[in-house]
Figure 1 (cartoon, rainbow, N blue to C red):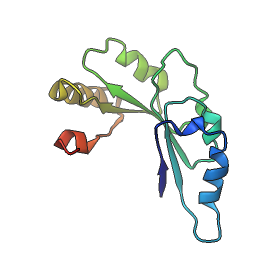
Figure 2 (tube, helix red, strand yellow; figure 1 turned 180 degrees about the vertical axis):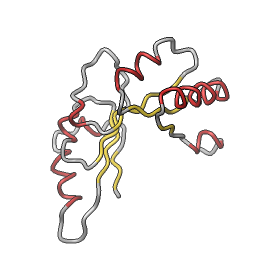
Figure 3 (spheres, helix red, strand yellow; figure 1 turned 60 degrees about the vertical axis):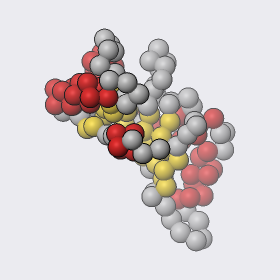
Figure 4 (tube, rainbow, N blue to C red; figure 1 turned 45 degrees about the vertical axis):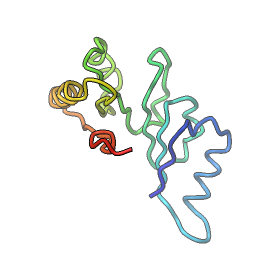
Length: 130
């Protein structure tokens, strides 16, 4: 498994060529996942799995290229449920850790149970490992 992540990988116009090389070359074959903010989703269209973590919610997303929309949860985000519903059934949630870590985790858990979606952690931040 190869995961291509940021910065922002879809700024590279030849990303699909690189993905194809990783998936099928003389040395070995890899499953390729891309994590993106959705800047240019078509540039990751050859990936086996694409996770989009939107930064700009006014942007339209062609979800034919997206397997999962990962939303960051801040307990003070009054529009989080609207965002979750917009991207269902491809939604997953991740708590923000930069402030109110405990409350953000609790809010994320509640939302995951309410909407029956997955939760992911940036475990190194949770444990305080830099």
